[in-house]
Image (cartoon, helix red, strand yellow):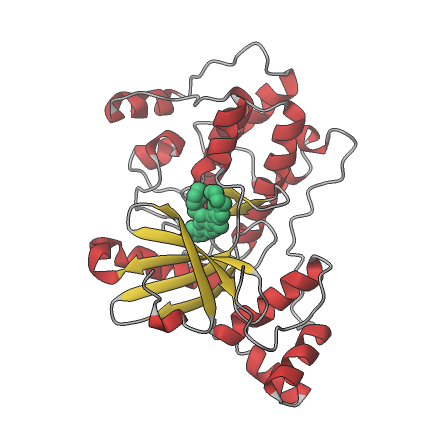
Length: 339
Ligand SMILES: O=C(Nc1ccc2c(c1)CCNCC2)c1ccc(-c2cn[nH]c2)cc1OCc1ccccc1
């Protein structure tokens, strides 16, 4: 396969694992740690008007560091291409998982929904609205943990999360009534509506509002009327109803969701939504990097904390991943070829 010169010696490219609209995703190994990554490759020429979306996604993902958000490790931009080196999520899309199981039990849906609530509470706390929440944008890692992706449509309103947005975007079936009516809306409130659609899809296996024709789909969304199948418990129905409120001011807020009885069932604690990543740098990783690069720890700390999303940033984060997974915090000195 044509080795991209920009990746040579840094990553060992393997098979293509997905190719969507304007991107191709390849499996690769990060040479220094041996860790698996996904590399999303986009050709600028074929991006066309989607180019700003890629820049939005890259800038947002650089700001977001959370256990339920797909980690961006490195960005390589050339004259014709973008390479995004991303967290490896080998269990694919939540969408395919739901389809494979027809629908999920309340218990299983709760495990996933708690992770979704954590991810959304975190991005809202960072001033971002996702605006395209749907099962296709939630990937599963090797431990069946959810990782939110696709921040191409996200908004970080200048005036903070209380300022109105206008652009109508996202996937129609997940779009809030105020959004499809072309009215001003709050990103956070629109995300809460999409989470109601998501929870309904997890528990039912199909969408509450669906229609082949967009105009009639919009009418159904604006009516706010959907049927609730017999297998839904009363608690599930009331939780979904609190999110699928047509009036955004009557809609439940993410803060209330964190301690909602349905989410707390099975004697759980409120959703722990803060990032598990600390602000300060990890000493063991810094030591290993300093030894490898022959620098003092102080100099190493200065370089790493610039977080330029270059190879050093990727190496630091992947070393940290190894540590969090209980693997040795070691860099591979000679570049070993992978079997
Ligand atoms: O690691 C990713 N995907 C991925 C990796 C390995 C495997 C699979 C999937 C499933 C197919 N069997 C082989 C195992 C992976 C990571 C990040 C992103 C990503 C982050 N922002 N944007 C995209 C996309 C990714 O993929 C796309 C995909 C490919 C096939 C199906 C489902 C999903």
